[in-house]
Each structure stands twice: as C-alpha cells, then as structure tokens.
Length: 385
Image (cartoon, helix red, strand yellow):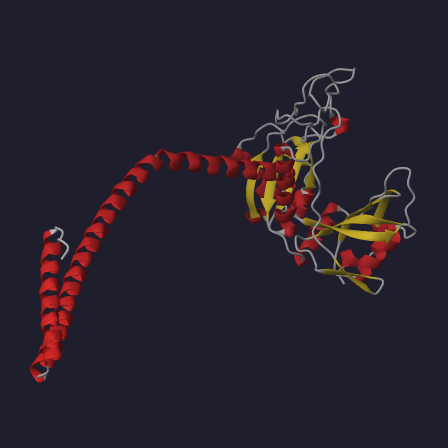
C-alpha cells in the first residue's frame, strides 16, 4: 500500500456531520495519480488577490519563466488564458503537475494554484449506509479494504429527519470506477454517479447557485417578477414554452441532463461539457442545412432515373408477353393437330356407318374451330350456327 493510502484520522478533515475532505496536500494527491488511470491533469492558476484577473502575458517570456522553474516543463501539453482571467496548464505527468502546484508567482504576478478535480476523479454512491456509522469509520474501512484513494465524502440527509440509513457520495482519484467495493466483508456493486440538474431558486437559471444570484425573485409559472398570486399565462423563463420553469419536460432541463451525463462520463467540467454539446448541435444543424440545399436536385435526378427504369421494364414485359402469346398459339395448334390426327386414324380404321358419322362430325368440328380461330385473330365475331 502506497504512502498516500496509509490513512489515519489526521488525513481527513471533517467539515460537518455530513462531509469529509482528504487533508493531504494537493501535491501528494496529484502524485498518487501515478498509479491511477486518467487522461490529463489541468492546473488552474488564479490571481492571489480575489476578484483580480491575470493579464495576458508574453508567451515567450512565460515559456522561458516556466522552463526555469519546472524541470519537467517539456511534459506540459497546453497553456491558455481562460475567459475568467486565469491561466490553465495541461499535462499528463503527475510530477510536472505537482511542481506546477508549488508555484506562487507567474513572472511578477502573485498567484494561487489548484487542480481541476473533474479531470482526475470519479464519483459513486453508496446507498443505505447506517447513519450511526461515522464518516471517519466509513472512510477508514473503505480505504483499508479497497485499492482506492478517497478525496471527498458526503452524506445525504434531508433536513429535520433522522433516518437510520442514508446514501453517501464518495469521490476517488482516477477516472476508472471499480465494479465492486468491499465494505465489512460485503462486496457491493457500484455505479457511476451522475448528478441531477440544479437551478437557481430565484431566477431559475441552470448556470449559478441560489446563494450567488443577485437578481430579483421571478415567478416560476410566468417568468415575471411580482409579489401577488400569478395571473399571467404560463411561460417558461428558460425556453419560453407554455409550461412552468420547474417542468422536467422542459427542453432546457433535458439538455442539462445530457450535459451532466457527459461531464460524468468524460471527466470534464460542466462548462466544457456545455461547449462540446453545443458545438455538436451547431455542427449537426449546419450539416442538415447543407444537405437540404441539394435535396431537390437529388430528388429530380432520382425521379428521372426511376422513370427511365420503369419504361425499360415495361418494354421488357411487353416483349415477354408477346413471346408467351406466340408460344401459346404454337402449342395450341400442335395440340389441335394431334387431336385431328387421332380422329382421322379412327375414321380410317372404322368400317361401321356409325363410326363414319362420328368422323364426319369431328371433321365439321375441326372446320368450325379453324374458322373460329381465324375470326378471333381478325378481331370479329361469329354467327350462331
């Protein structure tokens, strides 16, 4: 077991009765990634003075500065300035990431560095954990019985309730989730935790929490601001549809579900998941518009080709029908000739007057059939005998 996994109660800090945080330094936790699965580590550097932004720097000067401070600087795969006035470094090397976390300045600007947990952690939910079991006892049991490094733990308990058991959300290092967790000799199957959409209770936006909202409370039914009971037509403040902002069938709510699922499965931030899905939607829309421009030409071409094909098929069918009629006439003539030969043979062999009468009648029948065929070939009718 690695040094980071030799847990003691001092390794964790209890925030309250419902949450627990790993008290090891960021450097030690990042170094523990060397034995875990992950794609990349993103180190975010912010201005040390709260609310201040890091100005855009000369790339060459910043590159030279980082090379002097970080011995593994060649492992940095990307660097960019964010819209929030921060600087983000990307690397796949835990040692390089740990060294970046030790920086206190970028050139002459004082900074503080942290890591984007979404890129290097995975969450799962343990259901029905006895509330009599403290989070310290639970984390000790899980850490000793499983090859995992726990970074955060939170117990979900509704206010003003005292349940005997409650779910516990656990965050671990690495992007690969084990199929089972061993806990007190029990192998419990676990699944990836995907959060549900959360909206501001004041303005009903999905982009910020209620505690950070500076807007006036809006009505969830009509989207307007009023203090009396709502008398306006129902209209969603997000999609402008004729439903409440709390309706879970709202297109914006459904889209947010997809955003959070993408975030959990691909280990990216919520903002990055939104940008990726929005880009995909715009790309699909552009593809549809482009394809619609040539749809009419394609339909005309297909129609012309199908008409030519049907005409050739009809000509082929007419030729086959004519050949079948010719073959039928030949077969009918041959069969009729054989019948007449049989009657002629009977006539020649018979000396009885009665047989001669029958032969004469057959000859008459033969003549009538021959006349009938000639008449039908001419398209006319025959008179009754």
